[in-house]
Amino acid sequence: MSERTIALVTGANKGIGYEIAAGLGALGWSVGVGARDEGRRKAAVEKLRAAGVDAFGVPLDVTDDASATAAARLIEDRAGRLDVLVNNAAIAGATPQEPTRVDPDTIRTVVETNVIGVIRVTNAMLPLLRRSASPRIVNMSSSVGSLTRQSGTAAESATGPVAVAYAPSKTFLNAVTLQYARELSGTNILINAGCPGYVATDLNGFRGVRTPEQGAAIAVTLATLPDDGPTGRFFEDAGVVPW
Image (cartoon, rainbow, N blue to C red):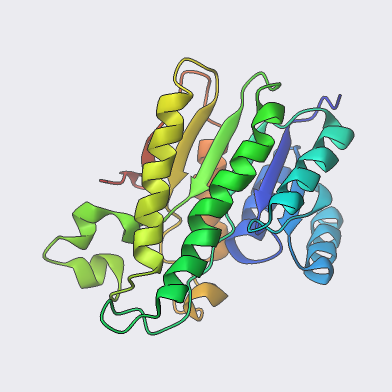
């Protein structure tokens, strides 16, 4: 078994996911780059290795059961365990997303990746996480999923435009995070949700005001929590995000 801390980041071939992998790799960790596209995955691994990161590719489609199972097998064969899982892979979904105009299939597709995909990958990796001395799960959420902020007087400025597929998928993910925290209470597995802020990525047409590196910071923080750290919470760089 590897003496290095072993992490897996889903959707790590670009954007925030890539920077999370880079940030964890800078700690001296061995980082699995989870991604569907073979070419982009290999390019990301090569770039990370050139920067001194012990990176390895993990073919992973979070919407596919067999892919998640194969990814867990790859990590088991390589390291024998998993210390940190960062569920970062997500999609925004097609437009329009006004509730009165949305295609229901858009909602199904977004939830399949942003919520069910997280459950699928987490459950596939849990046996490996249980072998770790200090396992951590980080679910990359968004403050647009905060019902408190969505219902506030400044909802538009705080959470962006109406998006009945994407925003509720993050609310759903937050609830899922709480359910895992409840079930895993009493174990050494800490699971939390993190908001990267409004980051310029292809998910939002690069309209964000933060860099991917800035957006990755909260994931690195939650991945390195001490053993007595919080679980079942929702954080951004400034602190706790209201549910």
